[in-house]
Length: 228
Image (tube, rainbow, N blue to C red):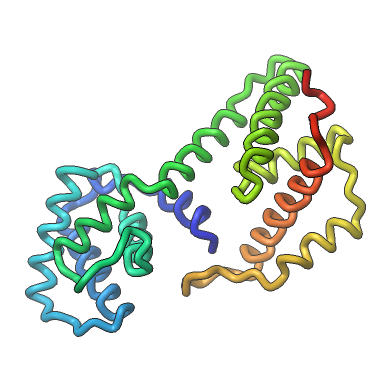
């Protein structure tokens, strides 16, 4: 499962501040032990891990209780990949640094903004088709110029934008073009070891293909047809 998608799912969970501290501490112990094993470190005795887990959970309740448990798992995985800088050993200072880095990360900020933008699109008032079309045009124009400025970045809500432009006849990809786009991502697999069903994998391939086709459309334009 793509990291952005995994984080979106995580953000639907209740925040840690709403969970029983004993349950959170037990889960923290599991995550810490998994991290030691993942990196090939000697696993400390459970009593030592329990002390570390209790201290980290206390910090989380005090400073970032808005985080979700699955976010802690994502945080530790990214930390192990040195996404939050180099580290020497696995100790309180290391895990505290990872939590601080994740809390302020571009990844978390980007995904939260995507969720907010998706809510904005869903919340567009059904006053009239013309009103909704105008709002969608403004969103597409913004995404178009963001992409033109930074073509290497992902396009938020790419699938929604693609479907809208296609339904209004601006994008006219043939079936062959769509199949070719999907073929480019046919070997896609999640980078982590989490299980993903074949249906979910195919859904992700379709989303990636739609984003690729949307980028091709944007690349062909200097200005959008409905841009004033």
